[in-house]
Image 1 (cartoon, helix red, strand yellow):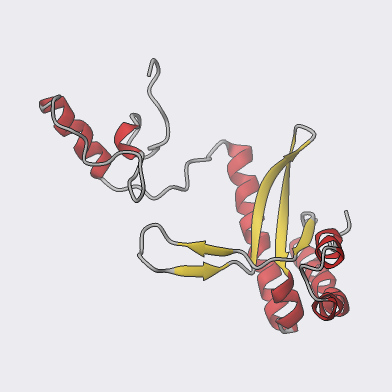
Image 2 (cartoon, rainbow, N blue to C red):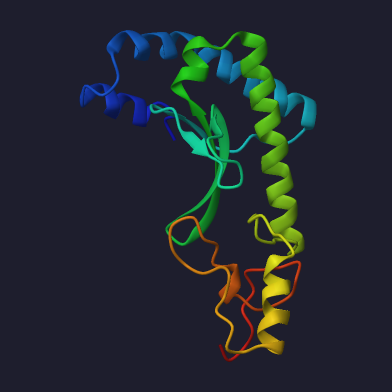
Length: 178
């Protein structure tokens, strides 16, 4: 897999300036060196990785107005029906990051990869959604007062947890027959 394929496409579509792509290409040796260093230190093979030409931004649903930039992340996906776990590095990280930063990020993402593989192989996967005691409180209130409207529901700024039944530690597990 060519880690620069998406960057090349973005340059061809004139979405990324050629000067930025050139900077990324020149610094790819740092990414490759970081990957090799992680492989040597861990004794494990680094997962497939690629350079994302955009800079993903994440908004917090729990904290109003909080945003974060995702310079790198681990992405589980499927390719021809098989699970593939990729590491995504942003072009901004590669173009503007120092060697030490790129190495630290590569190592950090590798720890996420190893943790994800461990969870998948042991069946310890759970939802990453934030949970609060509110769903349990709402269910208990409904049991005592069935005509009461739910406090939470679907819609802008509302959680879907009010409609979910199941284990309190696994809020996305629906009960049978629902």
